[in-house]
Image: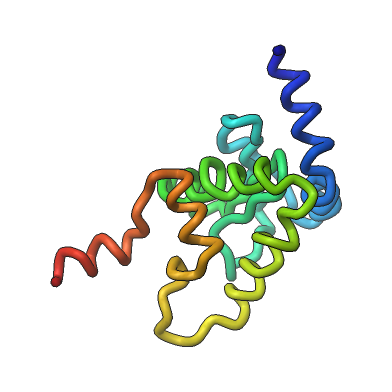
Length: 140
C-alpha cells in the first residue's frame, strides 16, 4: 500500500484527534517540521505552551521549541502516544488524551509524571525509559 493511502486511512481512523490538531494549529504560531515518521508529522510552534514538552494528536505531534532536539520527548510522542492513537482510533482522546492532559494539570507535587498509565504505555511503545527513572535506578 502506498504511504499516502496509509496516511489518509489513518487520518480518518484517528479523525477526532486530527480535528483537534487542525483546530489548534493556528494558535501555535510559526510552525517548523521537526520530524516525519510512523505516518506522523512532528511540528514545533513558537507559541507552544510552556507547561508541556509535547502532545500527540493523530497524525500530528507538536513540540515545544526547546524540545525539538530531545530524542526522548520526540520518541515518547511520535513512537509512543501515536501507537495508542492508531490502536484506539476514535476512542484515543477518551482513553489516553484527556486522562493524560488531566494528569498533567492535576498531578501531585513530587509525583513522577511518567508513572501514570498513559505515559507508561507511551514509553513502552517507544521502548524508552524516562530520564528520572534512569537516575533512580542508578541510586538504588
